[in-house]
Length: 167
Image 1 (cartoon, rainbow, N blue to C red):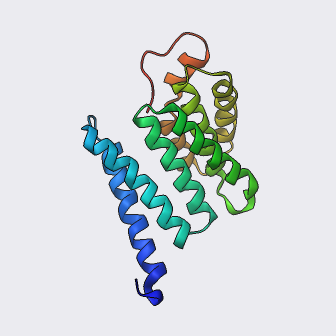
Image 2: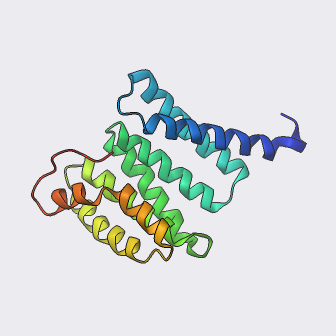
């Protein structure tokens, strides 16, 4: 790899793999091979953001890896990366956007949901909702609450039981 272009190449790879992950996440049905590609691409995207991005990119990369594991119903890995995402978000709050904290809590909520509505999930559900309400830009707030699948999570964390798990 040419050292002069290294950062540019990492940025290109980070963006390309990120786009692939979103294409796969948005599919209604994925083959096992596509799910594996989605997992590997999320990790690749995160790796390249580590090489060329800021702490915000690192945080969002961790969120994406957690999100992908949630999509394939891997609660343990989803929770692992969700916790790392929240830890980074709290360590560098001044470098984050207001929605980054909401999404860090959302990742922990989603992982908790996969873990049979765990106590931590309930705690993070309330924190995500509160952080989401504090998002200043109305469009970003709307995007967050659409992503959050709020109604499905209410069913889980109000002890009514989920009809389907959000991914």
